[in-house]
Amino acid sequence: MAGLLRRLAAMLYDALLILAIWMITLLAMVVANGGEPVLGASVQALLFLEAFTFFGYFWSAAGQTVGMRAWRLRLVSNEGGRVSLLQATLRFAVALVAVGAFGIGYFWALIDRQGRSWPDMASNCRVLRYG
Image (cartoon, rainbow, N blue to C red):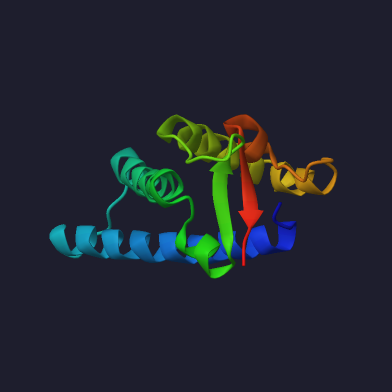
């Protein structure tokens, strides 16, 4: 299993990538809107969809995001195979709750005997360190 600090570092890398994607999206939207701000639920829904697509794709297709690759982490199902899109969706949803609960869902890995976070448990997956 991967250690919490390594996992948090990978999450920081991925958060910076998501932020860059969002900035590009918002810049394009502001330019298309004649320089006026873009607000509202549709903008928030688009940004949410971009984040979900990023994580859902990388987790289910490659088993690792860019941040996970940099920190030599890989996501696998508990059976050892690839993560399904359903597992990635569950992981993403529970990750939002885990972060929203002041990070408790990730710090849970410090007290779990198997080192699992809430997203790990909910999605029936585990994060492994390689190399």
